[in-house]
Amino acid sequence: MYNMKFDKTSFLKSIINTCELEDFSGIEIAVLGYSNSGKSSLLNVLTNNKKLARVSKLPGRTKTINVFNITSSFRIIDFPGYGYSTINLLTKKLLSKSLLFYLRNRLCLRGVIILSDIRYSLKLLDLKILKILQKRLISILFILTKTDKVSKQKKTVQISQIRKKISILNMDITVLGFSKFNKLDILVVRHHLSLWYNLFRNR
Image 1 (cartoon, rainbow, N blue to C red):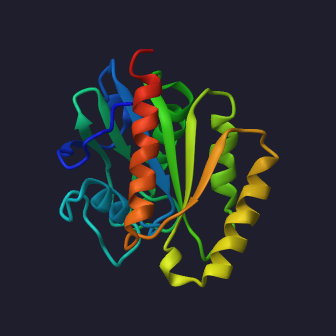
Image 2 (cartoon, rainbow, N blue to C red):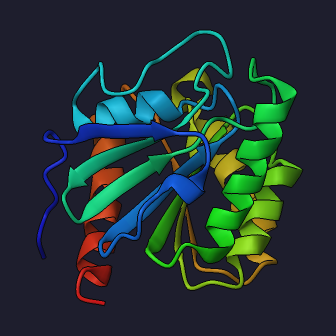
């Protein structure tokens, strides 16, 4: 199996609408989650580049869809956090419509990473997105972030509860706990992305 090298990941561009994305013969992985769920932190530790994605203490600071190249044939599409945001209403509606269209129709979309703060229960919007993806053969990682902020018992219980709620969808979804301070957690996410690359690169 080819192990991906993440430290060469580079920023490609920012867009407002996914219709700005050109046809792509490689593999795209979408990163989704509520504002302040830790998407930027995940991308930074995943690529070992603290400056790759801007981290802010204010939720909703990412206002564009950001494209990052891991390799020339494997890239990440980082969507703005949904939920609370400083984005104006018109732009928010455009981004929401753009996201749903992308999830339903983007042919090179092979995997989706959904991030959720482990301290909170499963949100309705997360379920809506999972139901949309139900109709497509797409690999899904559901990552419960900020596990360093809860006890080990709380972490175990929450992961179990989320898995149980998601199981009703009868989908192949991997649920993981994640802390940006835990090197093993980072390696596990990298491993999953490498698996996706090896699974889809010749399709």
